Length: 240
Ligand code: F6R
Image (tube, rainbow, N blue to C red; front, top):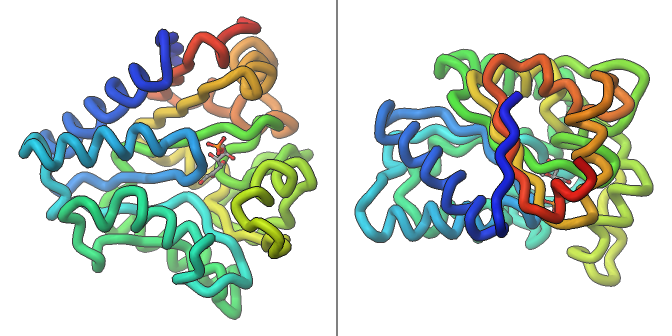
């Protein structure tokens, strides 16, 4: 695991977007694993800038998002599908047929999980997976648990995650379940880039980097990935 510390979230966004642009330009039909949440938004902003200045095209890029809420229409304003379109897809030349999400409303989540794994495999696997980290060390919606997860699965969100995300839903109670790529599937990505910014992530970051590999801090599994890069701002790195 390679740890890089930056002065600001803006510097991270530039470095992360340069990494993505290089991978896309080297491969043209690159397969991107993408994340939602506040952390990647500045990186998506820089990718849009790179697209607008002709440095990159997403025309042949395929994307797979990490997770999606259950029991929320796909085009609900709070779905991750909508989030990604607002933050990136609608502002670049990605083709809608190349955009992939887990279907949080699938009748049978096990079949949906198989479909997603096969879809990823059929395009040769994920070239780079972008991740954020929860204050409890979660990645995707893989919450602290007794064992690492495998392929995608249906998760009951923890109170900690609900406390962090309820703000986006205002007065409407947020979903209690989500479908998420499991740890096993995330770890199959050829390269992983985890970004953490802000003091609220410092404890989880310390556990991930200095602690043991344990499903009780799911991000710690990245120590076992052969090409994982962690980009931190000074606040997120403050307990290292
Ligand atoms: C998002 C995701 C989550 C977030 C994490 C951090 O697709 O899977 O694991 O990356 O909750 O969220 P933010 O960036 O909002 O602090």
